[in-house]
Image (cartoon, rainbow, N blue to C red; front, side):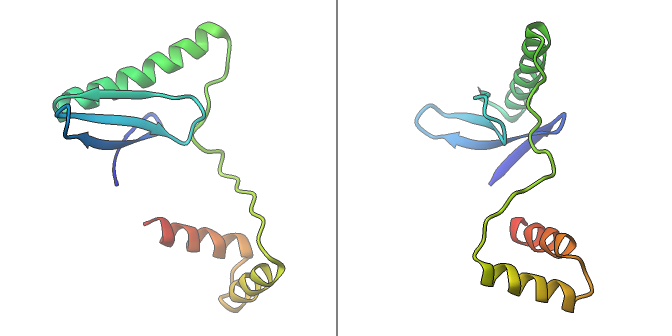
Length: 109
């Protein structure tokens, strides 16, 4: 997956072969923030403009902009998975949070 980052926001980038343009969509927020460009330079400019416009709109409306992530994840897993993860964490000398953070980081990259 190709991505771009600006001010803590990440966008997924795809190429639209039919229209011969790059298309981007900001990930991790409920608001739909999309943009496009014919070149990488134009795409980057449009992405940055989209984020700046979003932040300005939020400020004008007195709303806090959505942050892409809070750093908190709530998971529901079967008890046997929870138990196995806890044992694996303890066996490696880590807290379940530290162990899960490493597991998620490795899986995401």
